[in-house]
Image (tube, rainbow, N blue to C red; front, side, top):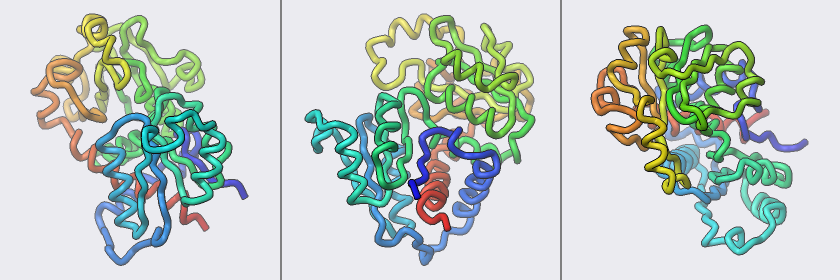
Length: 300
């Protein structure tokens, strides 16, 4: 039987997504040091992009579950010397129980999954960031209950986070408003596939109106640093600030996957204000990924 992979949120059903969220909440609330379902198992972690939250959460999660995580970077392995991805996938998967990749090209993760004999997890690509959405949705469910029927406003770059929010809207059935400047909008095919749940706006203020959750990300993601000046100009009207939050519902929440640049994509008063739950969101990377590891490796 082929392994179950987690490359995209579209790889799981609505009921599975909700089950992962509920399991993550339970694991967070009742940590049992004696519960070690992954004892003796190894997670191989391949990082082509640097990381704080992804690395710490997966390593800690494996330790909590009695397993072990191995950090691999291109400069330390044959991946950095041009070994075919197919060969690396076959070799590494023969020695570990699960693989997590944080990389640039989405095709790299897809190729690893195709040739891997163990589950492969997408820890981030330039196209998608599904693990972050597990944590984001867990955080919303903890604070406000099920997100079905609610409205989320994505303000900023139509990037990998935006694409995964589009997928989440399709799987969990909420409405997603997207406000991005011309030239930085999400992939039109991804938007079209999600249907009527997605609405695109030219104005951040219009997108935020009556939203239950406001989300943003940095204006220049990793690998786009040379575009920083150009992006600051393009995104100057897309900062999440008190005016944007005032357009949303009074009890609307604010999220950001971090790291955040106060004064750019989000004002400091919003980032550090009472509606911000960014640090609970960050912590939940640990709990949601523990639920994911359990789901992929302990399925009966």
